[in-house]
Length: 55
Image (tube, rainbow, N blue to C red):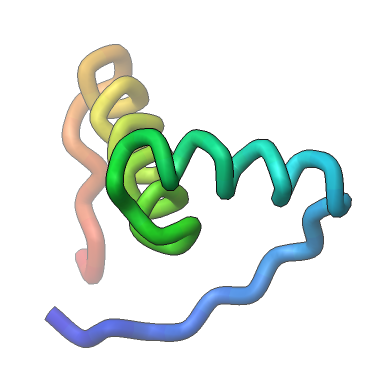
C-alpha cells in the first residue's frame, strides 16, 4: 500500500486539542488522525458495507 500525503486546514484550538489527545494516547498528531480516519471508515462500512476501491 502506497503512503500518500494529505493536507487539511484546521483551526489552532482544534489542532492543540488533537495534540493533547495524541500525547495522551502515545501517538503523534498524524498517528492520532490516522486512528480517527480508520475508525470513521470502519463505522461507515459497518453500516453501509465494504467500500470497494478501484472497481
